[in-house]
Image 1 (tube, one colour):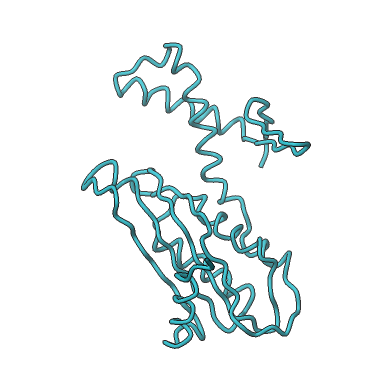
Image 2 (cartoon, rainbow, N blue to C red):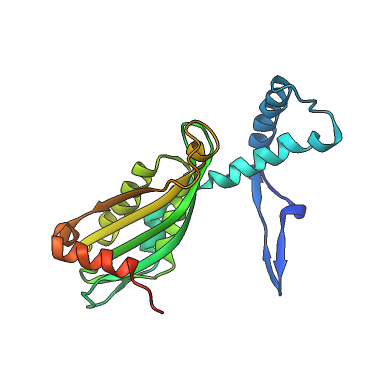
Length: 212
């Protein structure tokens, strides 16, 4: 990404660790200009104190919330693949998901539960949530997001099967339209051995079981 700018007031520093957010300054200016017009069209006064920096803040927030377009999800997996003869189910559950509905550009959020059965290779566990983020940080629909995560893991690791279940709340349903605040949407996608009823049932049992 060119024209990157380090934004000091968005930096986080905790016990020696420093996180620096980077933005494409040309894109920030372009998006911010539109939001100035949007504020005016909504009946607001973009020049008033509380809104002077709002277009720029929104532009930067949108860049962050959609930075997945610039992430190679398959590359994340390939960077931490290891040969291993382990052949039982590997489950990573309760992965936090934050995305934006492409229809209304409102958030949807929840949890993803993912499993794969290795076929000669395993992957570093932290890469599974990173793959989720790579696809979630784009304008999405939950159905496509579920399939993209499944397909990326299947095509890259070539396991004996992949399972993805996602449970999310959608602000486009809670804040507008039908306004059902407690509704949850569940989607699932399976490949290989997870298409077998017994294997799929074991996966579903594991993601609903408590360790307490």
